[in-house]
Length: 81
Image (cartoon, rainbow, N blue to C red; front, side, top):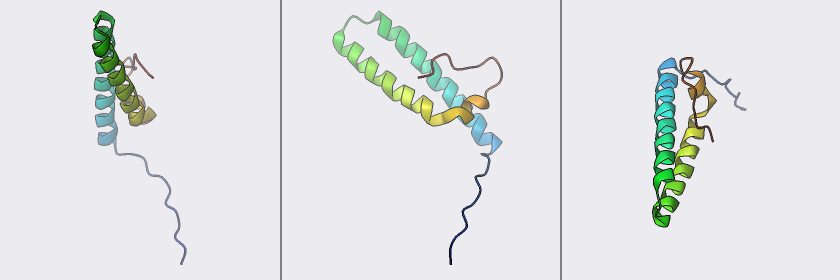
C-alpha cells in the first residue's frame, strides 16, 4: 500500500514567536561580535571571532524566513548573511 504524502502544515504561532526571539538575539550577537572584531589587534582573536561569525550567520539562516516574518514591524535583522 502506497503512502500519501501529507501537505505541509503551518508552524505553530508560539514556535514562530520563539524563533523570532532567537533570530533577534543571534542577530544582536553578530553585531556585538563585529564590534569586538573591529577593536581587536590580535590575529588569533580576530581569526577566532571570524570563525564565530561564520557559525552565527549559519544559525541565523537556520531560523529561516519564518522567524523573520514573525518579527514585529521595525525589528528587521541588521546583519543578514
